[in-house]
Structures are given as structure tokens and as C-alpha cells.
Amino acid sequence: MRYRTLGSSDLEVSEISLGSWLTYSGGIEADQTRACTEAAFDAGINFFDTANVYGRGAAETAWGEILSAHPRDSYILATKVWGQMSDDPADKGLAPVQIARQIDASLARLKTDHVDLYQAHRFDPDVPIEDTVEALQKVVEQGKARYLGFSEWTPDQIRAGIEVAGPELFVSSQPQYSMLWQAPEAEVFGLCEANGIGQIVWSPLAQGVLTGKYRPGEPVPEGSRFASETMGVAREVVYSDAALEAVQRLAPIADGAGLTLPTLALAWVLRRGEVASAITGASRPEQVHANAAASGVELSDDVLAACDAALGDVPVTGQTLAPMAESGIKRR
Image (cartoon, rainbow, N blue to C red):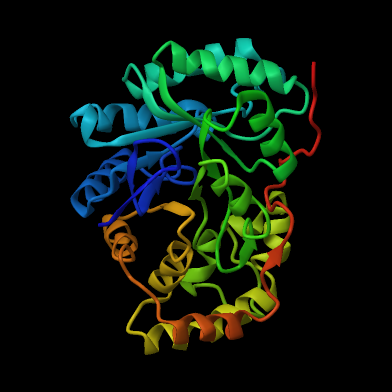
């Protein structure tokens, strides 16, 4: 496993990290969660990413039980705040009172006195950006988080945050990024790099599409995440016939390079120096080890050119894929 420095921080994160969005929030049994987490340690993964809203605390609770058995300095822990945490529609967002309440709740579930990275899960257009920044700064001042980041903020929102906080407050950005969704390359990567902000990308396998398990022309499998209409743009773009056909063209390229298709996809993401880590999910230990094997894989110029040709015009750029992202910015 190789490690990269996260933005302007002193955090050295594994190139492949373990996330808990669709698995440890209730999607798999506790023994599987433990097995996958231990497999991550075995593979050299030291960066674990979760959020308070995953299973409304279930993912944090699961990792609190498992990670607390390991020395606190043996792993880097990240969580997030923003999503609705109860049936009360007001129990969400980035208002100062909510941030203060949720960091304490997250720490209790995670059984730790601090997280290494605390992230604004989305932007909150209903709260003045100054209030959000001050509340996040307070979390760091209180020693409850070492560093701060954000996820799926638009370029304008990132600029607003930097304008208020200065270039040193945020050290990470967490956008969706994969062969099939290259939008962050258009502006987010460059803007963040200029301000010492590194990228921790989610869904580098396009929510499973880049494993090759879905076939073009076939109906969406019942029970799969793409069966839900809530997938929105992701279903229209990442699971489109054009995308699925491109994945079929990528398969022989991976084979010719002596790689599996997922390894090719992960190595492609890591080809960018702006990317500190690629967050992967897993429901079985062998998946963890397979994903970890992508660390250190360097793709030749010929392979990269072949990938570009296979992808054609499939990747969408210039906008966010996250359906929850809002573009408004409220000021005091």
C-alpha cells in the first residue's frame, strides 16, 4: 500500500481507503463489517471514511466497536455532518447548533475523543457560510477534529468558503469521480490544488458499474442500487447503455494490461496527483484486498490512451453528479 499526503495537512492516507455508505450502515451483518475492516488493516489501509447519516448513526456505531480495539494512532478516521438524522425535518444542515450537537454524537458512537477529518457532507444554502465556517473552526479549536473538509461543493461554494475562512481551513474535498464521471477535473481539482486542498474521491468504481457486472441492453437488476429512482442523474449517466457499452470496451484493455477491470478503474483515478485516496466499499474481505491491490499500479500512456478511446464521449463534465447538491450561497 502506498500513502499520499492529504492536502496541506500532515495526514498520510492510504491510496485506497474504506468507506461505509452502502455497507456498514446496515447493508451487511456485523461479522462481515468486522471482517472487512480487519482485512483493510491487513492490506495496509489506514483511512476510514463514514458519516453520521449513514444508517442514522449505525455505520459510526459499527466502526466505534471495531476500530476502538485498534490503537488510535494506527488509523485515520473521517466522518461528516449535514444529513437528516431523525424524522424531524429540521434535524439536519450546517447550522452552528447542529454541528455542535452532531460532532459530539458522532464521537460518542465512534468511541473516540476526536476524528482526524470532519467534513461538511454537502453545502447548506440556508445557513450563512460565515456561521458554518465559524462552527467548524470551533470543532477544531475544541480538539474534536484535527482537520476539516467538504464533500460535493460546487466551485462557487468552495470559493465562498475559502473567502470566509482563508486557504488554510479546509484540507480535503470529497467529490464523486471515476472513469464514467470526470466532472471534478473541469474546475474543482485545479481550484482545490491552488488552495492546498486534496481530493478524497467516492464511487471510483461508479457504484459498481466499472466492475463489469452490469450488461448493456439488460434491465436494471431488481434489488440493485440502480433500481431506485432516487439515483437520479447517476442512473441516467453512469448506468446508461452508453456507459455500460464503454465498460465492455474497457474490459479487454484491462486484460491486456494484466489487470482486473476494477484495478484498472482504481489505478485510472489514482493517476491524478490531486487525488490522495479513493474510497471503496466492500461486503467481503477478498473485495478489500482486491481493491487494495490497485495501490501503486501505474498505467502506461498507451493504456491511458486506449481508455480514453474506449470511453469516448461517455464521461459527463462540468457539473455535480450528487442530486442533493445546492448552488445557493447565503451570506450574513
